[in-house]
Length: 302
Length: 130
Image (cartoon, rainbow over all chains, first blue to last red; front, side, top):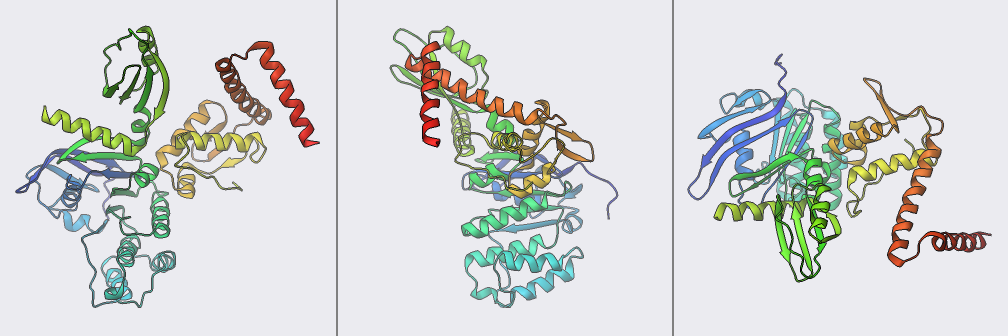
């Protein structure tokens, strides 16, 4: 359809949007083709606003947004063909069946893959003849995911896709998402509270809090840079001033230090002062997320 | 590959290290032989449901260590080195020995005393197995 191959699945530059009690401020975020990005943030951080801006459902006050090379929201009608979006807040027609929705979506989107849709029915354990009204919360979510996946979109955007899913359905969904990026021109953006899922399948991770981007980088650098050090501090020893200390708790003989720029040179610096590194721990994405948000809030208040 | 990879999120080792060690172990025990094709980065990512970037990192490091080779457009292969399995086995052993030396130092058991301890354990193990 479009002959121009854009390098990014989406780009947001300096995007701001205000509401009465909330402001999304100067957001810069982009995702390369073939990658999965996990968007992590507390409730009310601006995850859904970010996604709705990206989908052209909201008009930004400043900045520019491109999705699959299309300017949003003006070219949203073109982007829509290549992008599928599922949100917790959406709802299917309660008076219709899942099969009716499948026929409906297939008639609008030419890339609809009926064979894949039938496979997903089995994998997600869904009954096509079942009315939407009689569905559980999980079945409703799975139905929306099926309708999005079977369109074979270039970019799949999921707002809290695993919330409300049982562990088996979650496992199936993660498998399907990983199958999508076997094709290095297809990309996924998803927001989630489940940091274990994000840590497992994301290539890129973005933290947002209180309407601002706290940090965004590739997952391996995230996990590689953060460490928690447990340090023995003998009597009379004072720890040197160190850069990149995110958190430091000092006891009489022990200190715990969290850094976001870990490097082996830190050991020699500490040992020169007479202290001894007892243990170096890696941190989970959840711990890194909480520490990032706490630091960003302290900086914002001072 | 014949047997599946399993990535644990409760293992203290990061995921890319778990993948590296599972590939090295498969070569050490002969499940994978020199010249064998291994899955592409994206295929393995889909198979074990772990991000592409993590598999990429594991493959890159294995390549730098001379364990695998990636040929542009043709896939990734176990390095063409008949001794690779043996040398990986020795490296695995060395890691355990390093840990033993460190634990020995903590307990004040070093040098001849440590070797004597090792011989003793080897003797007990031999008895148990026969």
